[in-house]
Length: 254
Ligand SMILES: Nc1ncnc2c1ncn2[C@@H]1O[C@H](COP(=O)(O)OP(=O)(O)O)[C@@H](O)[C@H]1O
Ligand SMILES: [Mg+2]
Image (cartoon, rainbow, N blue to C red; front, top):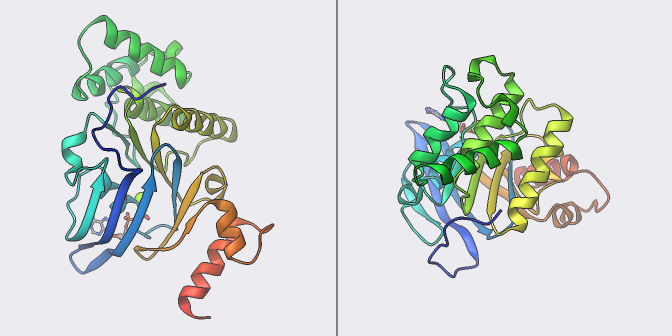
């Protein structure tokens, strides 16, 4: 699937972040974080609960504004103006439970500016086929299981073929078969030129990403391909959990 819109920037990176900080009152969520995400890959934000993943993602999609530092998304410093280029799947599905699956997609497709009529209906059908829910398109969302709702939520983020997809813990609670299916979609979107940012707190997901940033207490403690990170941790054949713990201990000076 090709992104519908081209961006006007030639930079190799989809996202560039320098010294980004954000606090909720006295709670510091991000501490002078810097990160670059190359285009056309699946990029994982891996970290435990409370490490700042959701806050970082909200800044990437323009729902929060930086308190200090800078963020550039697809060449723009104002991500909120790029909604047609960005697909965002929030951590908790934001769906209308009383509306049908198809009506939910239609709502998001209109928000993202998909043209009226036949073309939009066709695109909704394609997207629901992709997440294997077309046969449920007339059902109200309240009749669907949790995993199915997550697939609807993913479809809502995909429907306008965004150049950048930002998915906040999209695989939580999915059964293994659906999880594998999600990763197949993610890789196929990246092969077709989209950039995907995917947050997770499980290392199962980490191994699927082209590149990863390990987050802890609002900062990036390591960044690279899964292989690079294992090597840098001195355990090329070890697990990514071990690599994460290595970087945590190194940061703590132990
Ligand atoms: N709306 C909010 N109000 C106050 N504190 C918040 C809010 N959202 C997040 N936080 C705090 O910011 C920190 C980072 O949270 P979050 O970005 O949600 O992490 P993650 O997504 O990695 O679990 C945590 O300490 C969390 O309690
Ligand atoms: Mg979160």
